[in-house]
Image (cartoon, rainbow, N blue to C red; front, top):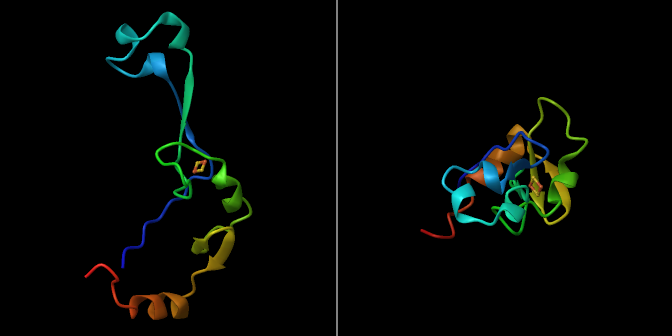
Length: 91
Ligand code: FES
């Protein structure tokens, strides 16, 4: 089991022309093209944002959540202990 925590609720935005070593290799028209990189962990098209971060809006500070599809589940201590007991499907 691996628990990965993502705290950010919106993507990182990067302009192609700001990526070191890229600006010289692309046409000037593309320098201002903006990429949105997923930082919430929910995108189905990583590394790019697909708008799934909207699901994390409304999370309460100090609580831990898991997502299955579009469903949000609060991870309580009891839930965490149950999850910890599940076999690792890839072992
Ligand atoms: S930041 Fe993850 S889907 Fe947008």
